[in-house]
Amino acid sequence: MQNRVEKYLFRAFTMTIFIMLSACAATSHEITESVNHAPAGYQIQKLVVVAITEDGPTRSKFEDGFASAMSNHGLSANVSYKVMPDLDDLADDQKLEKAKSETSADTSLMVEVVEKSAPAEATKNAMFGVWIAGVLLDDRDVRRVGAWGGLAAADAASNYKLRVTVWNMDDDSLLWTGDTISYVYDLASDEKSGAILADTIHEELLKSGLIK
Image (tube, rainbow, N blue to C red; front, side, top):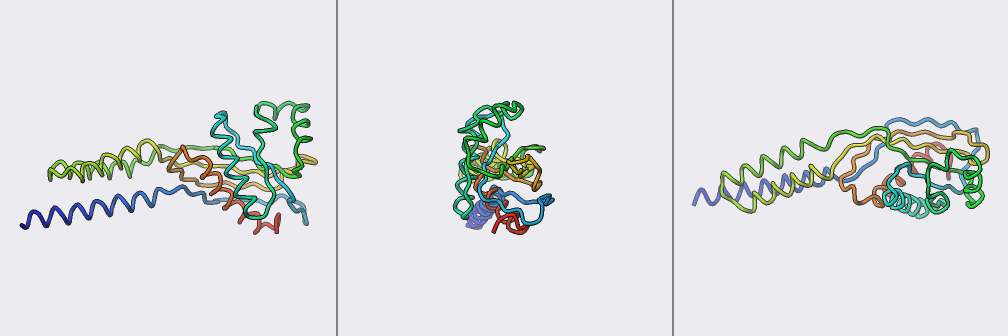
């Protein structure tokens, strides 16, 4: 009877650990440093977002999520991949001017990854320990929690440093720069990640006075 009670309590404990680790692994973007370069009184009326990545589907999903979230905050925002599908065109003055002429935005916002860390090994190792415990206790449910939790941590979680720059499209002057520590749990959810970053950037632009 005592062994059954101990096994039940341990199973409840491991399930709680798994839920807590999953919650901690939610996608987040935190600004670590920002600089406002804009002249006094500058106000963003409409922006276009540019995600700097060679992965087309990732770029489009991220930009869609970012632009949609910004629009929900009341700031008009468009994606760039529709008017400039090839990012190499940023270095071509003629193509760049053509792309600018096809958008009514006065401000561009660029997002790029400047640093990527290793996967979340701590979570992976913790869930491996849970799997071992399941083996020792001969408990299939505990083994399953450890196996799936470790797989999710190994395959999906990464830390990034993102750099966000905001530019005046009339004279190409730099208006604002911000760096983030970003934890992305599900790399397939680029649209959600873009929306979460937009919420963070919107708050920062409000603080800087670039939007109202």
